[in-house]
Image (tube, rainbow, N blue to C red):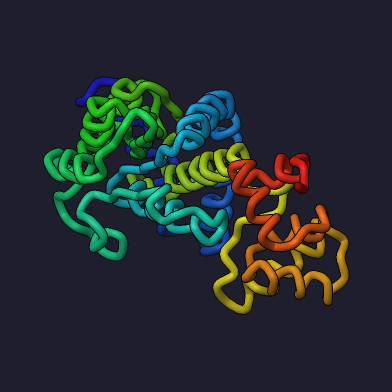
Length: 301
């Protein structure tokens, strides 16, 4: 796709020109039918997504970070995914980072012209001090937005692994990165509004990427969120349910284990499954790099 060509995500479908005249339910049926095409488009890229997951996990196991960079909807989705990693997986907020053109103000309101500022992208990347252990994922529906494109180029120059995530084939973004994911979603029902199918595709891919990376890093036990941070009533209840599910222990035993481990779900599970005290559980988890399955195999003494 050349720089001057109109990307498929921006194409106007003539047969949808009368959507403003449709009965509301028919308009919604049309949009819903188009939305159902997105998971299939993502499925076509699973092999590429898997390659990215394995590459990112290998680097993060060495202390690297995962960084998303995008503008508008794409940037906000990256910030959202990054923000949800600490409560879900117990990660340090600096481990998964979202960069959005225009800075934090752009998360809640449009910052006109920011997506064209390659200098801002270069400065944002430079401020992170990326290393070869880090990964930067540039996210753009069109695949040619200047901000993520410049971010990918700056990250690659710093030696970080770079990934391009676009919703069109043959994009400049994917060409600039070492690894690429191209989810073709086609024209939007509302022409050019890439917060629709393209935004859904990006959200699905980021869900897959961050979740699978954390599974590979041992941040889960089976399909249980054993590294969640129990910071409110809902999450404390969830922690109790997770410990009970993982161990089969009764309510009193679960509460005692969580109290002994200061609410650390993974430690509490180890206390119950390995029949050890809290300090021993902490030591075993430290020795196994936080991987609960591996900790259960270590000698208790």
